[in-house]
Amino acid sequence: MNELKLNILSDEESEKVNSHKLWTAVQTIAWIYTILGGGLLIIVAPLMIYIKSLPTTLSITIVFIIHSVMFFFSGLGLIMKKRWGLVLMTILSILTLFAVPVGTIFSIIIFIGINKNKDKFCK
Image (cartoon, rainbow, N blue to C red; front, side):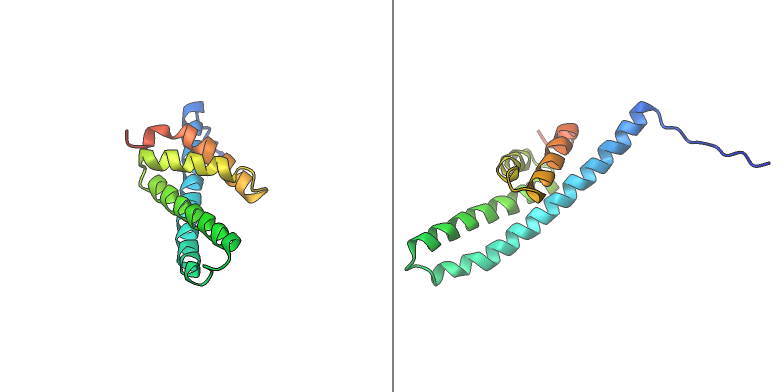
């Protein structure tokens, strides 16, 4: 008769598994931010040539460019596990916290993931 063996993880092992899954989610979001920021920068930056006449549109374009640069470098810094990436991603997460629902979900995952994995970053 075959016995069914249950592999029960200890609390410490379970915490490691959950931390690894959370870190994988944070890295995935970082890649999305890097690609999104780079893509927006490629699309929006050339538009500045055509919209010099409208001050409101120009200011919105400049905000998009700053936001794109923040997305790109915060994602890149987090992927490279740099301390400045951690700071930029925290600032960006605070800004996108109010972009309901996707920004809020991403920000919460990033806050929890960074908090549990601070030891992975260069000092």
